[in-house]
Length: 530
Image (tube, rainbow, N blue to C red; front, side, top):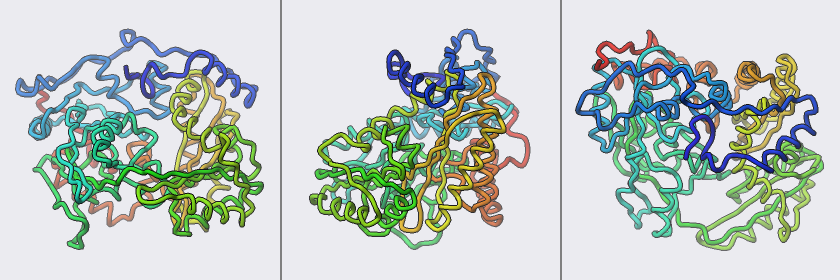
């Protein structure tokens, strides 16, 4: 059973000895932390407003007004979402959850909501960490859950592509492709609890560090339902015919239309793998080694640099200069030679490759990576501030950016009375720059951890913007990042985006407040079906 208030499945939550050991480690790191446990409230005890709208009879079979369903669709899975739920602060929730069974149902829902002035929030797996699925406005809203549109409609093994409905979850998709020896090869941390449509709408980044890192790279064509009609691009390996239809909708976060299906490029499943971890005494040397690999053409599948604190906390490794986690894979040929060349390059930069016969930092870190969201929830319930933020910049800009982010985060934590540490790791690397991913682990005051985090997040986002790094690399804009996205994008493009929005969504019903600040109040429900 999915947790309504936190990450993942209830059965997989951190509990018992694992929870006790986690709290013990935090207590040793932060002796002043309170670490008192707080249980989530019962749904029946929450002050949940009754639905303000009712669907027309033709759509009634798609609707749910169940309190647990509405609460489960009200927020994503960011730290601030989890803590507000733990506090019983449910705020605005969708009035109804609608689950279309066909694309025709999506068309009918958008027609109804446009005419009635009801906001529509497209919903994939609900794993947003940027306020992308939260109805942060006063008017009536529905959550449009695409989970029933979850089929693989066609597989073209010759071209290695598949036509896939947007509501399919990651594991189910891979299960359908596996008998054909194929894979989408897109594995974000949210893989188990996110959908193809969500990846496309947010321009998601996957697990792999180089080459095909973003979902954008895998798209052959998209089919999108908008309030003014269905838009479908030609299925082509490439085209130079004007601005890209697909690029318009990739990253549109449900504001321009509802992605219902896509032709996606597939890969053969890897047969050969090799990996290792490399320890460094000096962090600057570790960064230089990582840059050399990113520019070498070796294209490692994994090239994840953990700074010393990240290595200690999440890989259990004490390395003064950090740990570089390396991995290679191929469906065509052995990759041992590529790994050996990469390790040789690391040695040239002072790296110390670890014996691959022993369980090393790469194995430990991979296990910790999959448990991180569950551990975050457990620590949040114990009054800790545990959250991440990410960006991307050029290699030449990284040293100054990292120094500014770390010092600003520490200053912000002191300002809100939170003692803690800040970590940094590279999730993706490109020839021209890395994608640094920062983590904050701090003791908070129960009842104030959301406001404490908001101040820290604002401070670090300001410094990221000031250093001309991106406000998000692979976690989308949503409502949380929009003030900094407003600064990042050029003014002419903002005007063009607003014009596209007004053309495709003239009723301004699609995910109000995401990507663009609404010109006027969100929909108010002119004839909401009551």
